[in-house]
Amino acid sequence: MEREIKDSDGITWTCIQAFSGLSNTSKAQDAAEVEGEPDSYWVVCTPSGGAQSVRLKLQGKWEEEYSDEALLKEIKTQQ
Image (cartoon, rainbow, N blue to C red; front, side, top):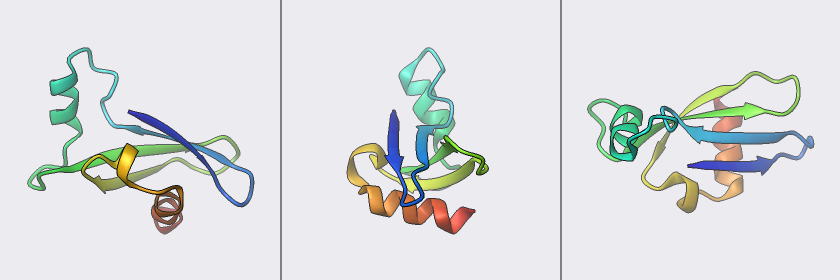
């Protein structure tokens, strides 16, 4: 559950669902889910440059359903 996108400044953002490193996939999904908000997940996006990582709350299958532009918009909103 990792995705890379590049912004207009040439920064490559690596976005990964929180807790995706857990050994059991269903447990990782449960751990990353936003409490009280079904089908919402915590995602951390880390830049290749000097900018700070951001934590996003995204819906559903974000790695497939969000366009690059939508993810970049979410990142800019949280910076």
